[in-house]
Amino acid sequence: FAIGECACVDGRVHGLVAPGYAMATLLAERLLGAEGRELGAADTSTKLKLLGVDVASFGDALAGTAGALEVTVNDPVAGSYANLVVSDDASTLLGGVLVGDASRYALLRPLVGRPLPGDPLAMIAPAGPDSTTGAGVGAVGVAALPPDAMVCSCHAVTRGAIDTAIGESGLTTVAQVKGRTRAGTGCGSCVPMLSSLLAESGVTVNPALCEHFDVSRVRLAELVRTQGITTFSELVSRYGRGRGCDICRPAVASILASHGNGHILDGEQAALQDTNDAFLANIQRNGTYSVVPRIPGGEITPAKLIAIGEVARDFDLYTKITGGQRIDLLGARVEQLPAIWQRLVAAGFESGHAYGKALRTVKSCVGSTWCRFGIGDSVALAIQLELRYRGLRSPHKIKAGVSGCARECAEARGKDIGVIATERGWNLYVGGNGGFRPRHADLLLTDVDADTLVRTIDRFLMFYIRTADRLQRTSGWLESLATATTRPSLGPDRTGTNGLDGLAYLRAVLVEDALGIAAELDAAMERHAATYRDEWAGVLADPERLRRFASFVNAPDTPDPSITFVTERDQPRPVLLPLPTTVPAPRADDRPGASAVTPR
Image 1 (cartoon, rainbow, N blue to C red):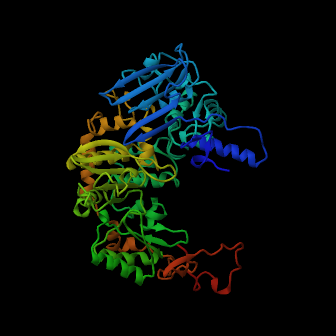
Image 2: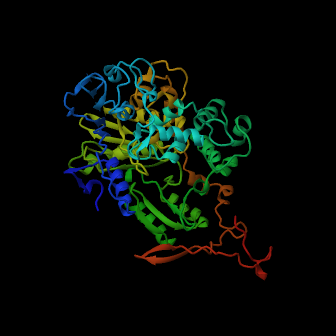
Image 3: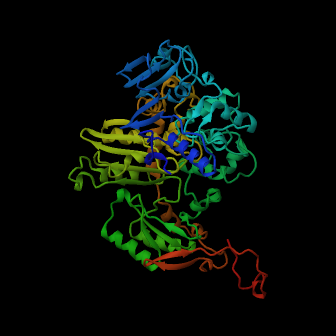
């Protein structure tokens, strides 16, 4: 058997996910003994991004049907092109192509083969209303979709299936709809429509962060900022209830840290941190921790390389070069962390924040300094950006890349922030990431100078921190800006931004100051850059903070006996011991007050 791009079906190879899933379903049926059903016509609708430009096609995109008519709108000012293919009597939608602005794709694609819900010209005219809201004459809204219309072609989920799931299961969030129906978990192009379907179903979307707060993370961040709140207890007493949970406590800890609320291990803040932030290190599967010093832009001196090597040798740590141009030291026990960092800080290193929801790395190529193709000093810019944004706490981790030319050796377009040198300046890309659903970044600015570039990145990060949901990457956040119903509530829309797609809306806010908050965002980033202090240096200088780095309270220098290593390829590697199935009976020397040690 063969499926996907290695299968030639009726003389055609489909390079799309939906036909691949259809083949997989048919293959599963054959393996289970079902015969007779054929693959049928594949859904070749798709939405792509080519060199930063949205491109979408659906149905009979090239007007191959006999007698088909084409309705075309070409707007060179806005940089968009739309072409709808309709039947010879202009009553049925057959297909179409969208270039530049593909925001109508999610709603037009399910209507292929169905009666037109309005004037085809009004459906694609740039001067028309926001197509995602369904408001106004000629606009296409979710109300036009019949129950059997395919909303998610990747997983063959219809509008009726989504409506049924919402009604029967009481779904109130897009995440719940995804989990129940799988819609939106493929290419993601239908995600904006899921919010509209929730609203269309008459469901009151629950914004609550958790059972202790009835408001969203965005609203809590706004309250912390505007009310000058500095502790979790004050926030929960004024706007919540109870003592918090593993959802709201780390979220509030991140919000407080984002607003420069002192060292994260001081006072009440220390109790809010999750495992990684609590020990300023990433816990590994065997209970040890990783140490990742910051190496801005990947540039490091021989002396610092030697220092890292000596630390790894003396503490018997596993070492690995990461994908973000860092050196990862793994296998450190919690009581070893201060001693390791004492030597690293003395050698000139600081925390790389690999454990935090913060800026992780700014990857760079060697740029114009060394590369014969380089046209921009990518290393210098990467170092500048990393030192400016280091320690910036955010809703999720942030990764950046700077490439010295279009050959893209730093893979900038796969990062939350991507910068690529051009002959006339820098191109800025935003909203890319890897993970479970990789996404290429969108082109936000073209050929700008370094000052404009940094100022725009400042605003992008601060706007993201203020308005993103809990644990929402910049990719998902940018997609959530696609419709007016899912954009952050920042007061009246004074400049007509409700008619813009997500990227245009972001450009209006950050570049054109459409919401009048650019000065606030600029000032917030300047405060962060001016007040940054290395977290590990702060721990080493404070005996009270150092007390928490012990495996056992009454025997701080005792290693955890469950951590075992073997040597493989001349490196220490952990041995995972099986968990006991029964609790052993207490021995005589395990009495309280004897020589046993007490776990923290």
